[in-house]
Amino acid sequence: MAISINGRDVALPDDPRVSLADLLRDDLHLTGTKIGCNQGGCGACTVLLDGARVLSCLTLAVQAEGRRVTTIEGLAEADQLHPLQAAFIAQDGLQCGYCTPGQICAAEALLRELAEGLPSYVTADITAPAPLSAEEIRERMSGNLCRCGAHPGIVAAILQVAEERAA
Image 1 (tube, rainbow, N blue to C red):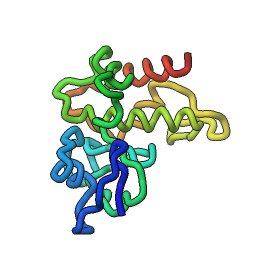
Image 2: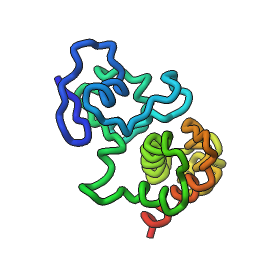
Image 3: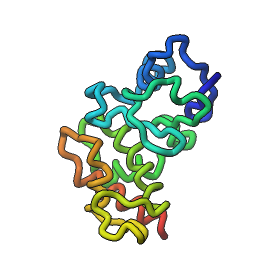
Image 4: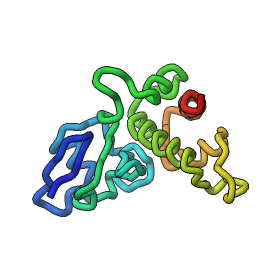
């Protein structure tokens, strides 16, 4: 029984009550995943589970058995920044950096949702592909809080990467 975390198989914890966030941070020392509120309200602990965003503080590690978890540490290739990491820097989408790993993981999932044509609450026509817009991005990122107020840079970074991928 194992979980694939950033491409590496990891044994499940002995205690089935261990959260995915605690497994990542305490046992595997993947400290990019932050615990903000520990109640699912801030999004700082967001990671990807089979490509979809999850709040790792509310996800038990055993729920990830046989699945693929990607953390901020697993997004980059070797020593090269992931395009979203580079865009967050270029667009000034971070200040203190605490929420940034969760923001970037959520943004990666958001871009996949848009590519798959999945609608959000603000998508006007749910029968058509969801449009790329600042309004769509803000809605889809609403579960990830930035207390420093870097939201304009975060939206700009996501728009930048979406446009680069579309080109």
